[in-house]
Length: 386
Image (cartoon, rainbow, N blue to C red; front, top):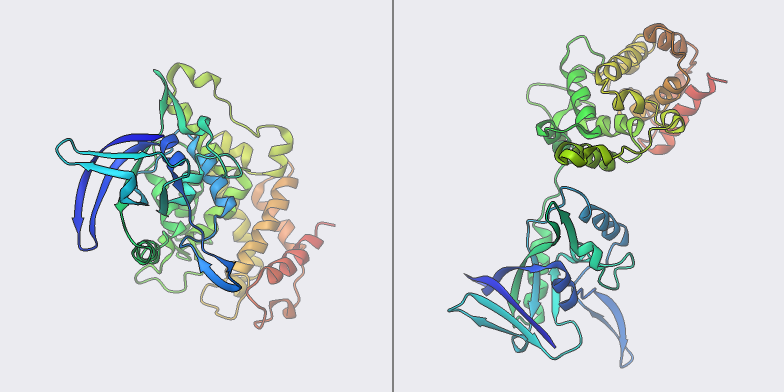
């Protein structure tokens, strides 16, 4: 027997009335099911049934991990459809009451199946009660979710809601997300990399001056910005951290845990990690300025050795584009990992870059902007180290 009372409000819109309230995550999982669209054989005919897209298990696991983080939040509503036989609206009390003797799940998910899966086990087949609680100074508390109930909708209307909600969503540009990290009060690989990128892009003596698209879109009155902000940020982060989100969570917890902050440890601080992620030790020691100087010195050497290829106004160049930047960053990683601790960084990069021998054909303008091109360019650079 299912019996759940939800404090709710009734909303009237052209499609009809629906109800918005909050539920414990454990209760929500217990009554809901996704209805994935798939082909089923019925009476020797192929029928396409269901309205949801297939569950992305990787995305569901990412949300499972996110649910346990210090700053986890789902402020947007999970949208459900439920038959009127399973619910009652008690307007005088503002209560949406769900009651059913049906042992099966009774509410179809129209939007939010991956968020719901975040409170289930790794296979997304059953409730995981530990996922549905979080710890506070006063003990454990239930994770609550905002829920919207549509009652008694026929299947075409349910499909219409799913289509409208998902087709009208515009993905947020990653460059904007990284740009907003500047507003954070706590340290993170995302914020450090963003700050470095901005400083390199705005200094008129920098090899990156005015060539990075802030927010991922063209800057007014600036021509030929070859690289997106997210591209450069992510390449720097790869050398700082094996798991930028986990590092971000560490600094967030550290800043808000008071007396418990000493018990919170940062992972991947051993010598092997520092070798694999050659900017990690500098990042941990809050030496972001030194990271910026290294990148500046390295790309200054690139600019000096291949000025035509680095010229952002050269539309036929390869190194000034994303595929070339990827190859250059791979080589930068190799050089930083091998850098003698006592050597001047500018001299070191200049000598290392001069050993790389490109042929004119290596910059063939017909090369595809693909990972294959990046690998070929990087292979030529790396061969200079042998």
